[in-house]
Length: 358
Image 1 (cartoon, rainbow, N blue to C red):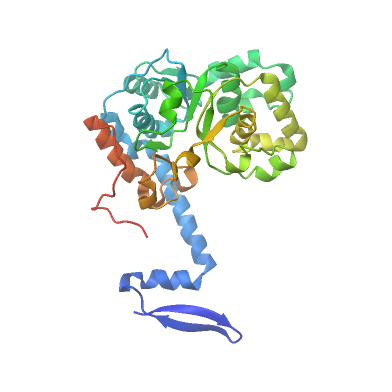
Image 2 (image 1 turned 90 degrees about the vertical axis):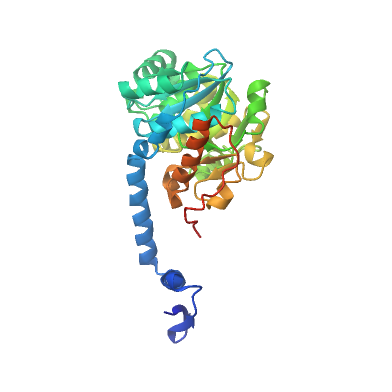
């Protein structure tokens, strides 16, 4: 079967036959060259549905981590790995944090429940991470209600109604973990080898902070509000994995929230608001290290092809593309195998038994 390239001229569409590389690819080439938007939208809708189904069944997909040995954490360490966790990401989190702790064990670990963690989940976390501290949503909200001044609360919805990321990955951190050296760790991370700079930052108590590349849909409004960073900017920042010493003052945070409130208070309910505010705060920290400038492709995106991901230090499988080409579970399987063997890990290689995406 011949694949056909369609070209548009004055007389309308004309067909330009082309020989496909092989018969199996002919239909793909035909659809791509036609650039039929309805089909692209259909393909996108199918992937989004597929992605949502796998996310909803994440604990089943990554349950093999439950067969890996526990890793004891140092509850008295100066540096704290902090994660806001949802019940359905439990196994993915255990896999991700273990993949990091095998390279950087001398840290404390705090898990902040978003209110969904069950008693069984709490037992599982404690069993796999002896020494871990788990904070309940209720306790964190109670602390904020007591510690946040009215000058800040007046710009926020009732705390019980605040966006979960604003509440538990920003406000409760600033108030409840003052002066602590923190590493934010999203549950959708995987580490393949020892992270340059980060291990030294932990072991030598470096005064700098670190973060990785990213982006934000809030770039335009934040720039219009005057939040334009010289070294760290909302347009190039991700809060999934970063490290800093929490010297943020409540007054400093209140000023930022107030400016957002008067510009457009609906932004305080935006999914990316916590990340955007952290980018502003990082701009005031002094020396900030972008991990992706230390090493090319330091933090891989789940959108990248496997060949590129496997050469990175770590990967961040954000929700919108988490299961693209099934790279996440493919790499997870390798990390689980390494954890079972007590292996420190090497850059993962493609499993030849699995087909590689184009």
